[in-house]
Amino acid sequence: LLSEKPSTGYDIRKTIKNELSHFWNESYGQIYPILNGLADERLATRRRSKQKGKPDRQVYSITARGKQVLQEWLSDEPAMQTERNETLLKLLFAGNLDVADRLTLIEWYREKQRELLARLDDIELTLESDSESDSARRYGRLTISHGRAEARARMRWCDQALREIEAEPKPRTKRSRH
Amino acid sequence: LLSEKPSTGYDIRKTIKNELSHFWNESYGQIYPILNGLADERLATRRRSKQKGKPDRQVYSITARGKQVLQEWLSDEPAMQTERNETLLKLLFAGNLDVADRLTLIEWYREKQRELLARLDDIELTLESDSESDSARRYGRLTISHGRAEARARMRWCDQALREIEAEPKPRTKRSRH
DNA sequence: GATCGCATGTAAGTGGTTACATGATTTA
DNA sequence: TAAATCATGTAACCACTTACATGCGATC
Image (cartoon, rainbow over all chains, first blue to last red; front, side):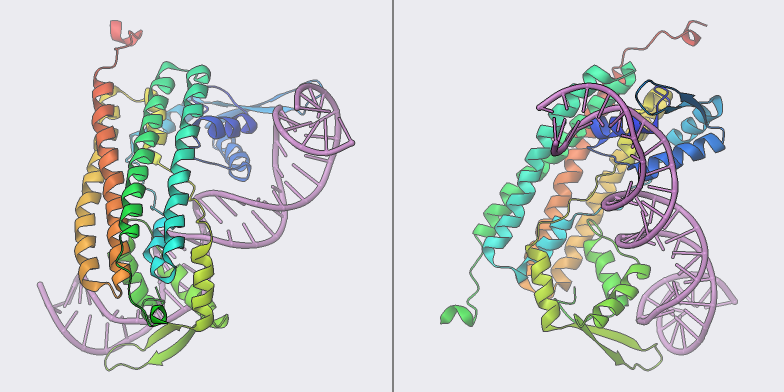
């Protein structure tokens, strides 16, 4: 983010929350120590900026060396994140639940995707107004369309899953005969 | 997994790798201490089983209390995982790369989705032959179709992204005039 | 003779969140 | 007057991976 503009830890957190939260997140507990580390390694410089009535700001700017290291990192193959989907994990063991709870699980997941789509609309607006560079705006739009494609695919899957669960053959258990 | 059948840590790792790796992963460093913890909390019992020529197996079985705790966990709303996609993160700053490297990034991602689809075919076969219960097989199939829906959506997005990047207006930089 | 599968585990390190501490100003 | 926003940071804790240690038997 410093390659776009000099920022404080607080700024960075805000940007991530407003514009990147559909595919990335960092907490203060990560951001502040990392910025310190960047300064130690001379990948960024720090400048204290005084304000009236507000705490001092620590403004970090990327250095030439920082830009170089960034470019090297960008050229490396991305590390694939370990996929984790707790909904699917629960679904796999849904045999331990009754049918109503299985449906609730999928409906909950579907609702989350709907919420994500709504949030993507907000992020898109922020992105169009706040992006520093043309390329950040252009590629930001692509991250949005990626999010939408995934969310829509998941919603369609939910619809299919709901139909299948509703159509499940009722197993005649010992209990059901009473 | 113990609700399906009694298993050792080694078994569990294998099952996760062969049947759940498209949406979940655990390493030995997690599994063995967790199984120990389950036994401590009386959610599972441990039985040492001797073998000829092979190390002893520690076989864990779920207890009644374990089944109850499992059902409670299944009934809770899933905790949504923090989404992280390093490809999108790199894409957002792709303005620092030349156009060829931007295309390479998306092509790499597309290839990963193709590989995932191939792996899903393998997982499906394992699942059909190895699943313990009917419901595990039925819901296992649903996790596969979820994976396919996501992978296909991402591939279509890649195709779109590649077209857009190729069609980008060439910015007339100072360097390009030489 | 090398490597793979079986089998259990630990130690060190990394990555990450949450809660806390502090405190002024602005907004509801 | 309660709360949100601005602003920086740390400590405690949790989650997770990687590498290591051990060792037999089977396969290539």
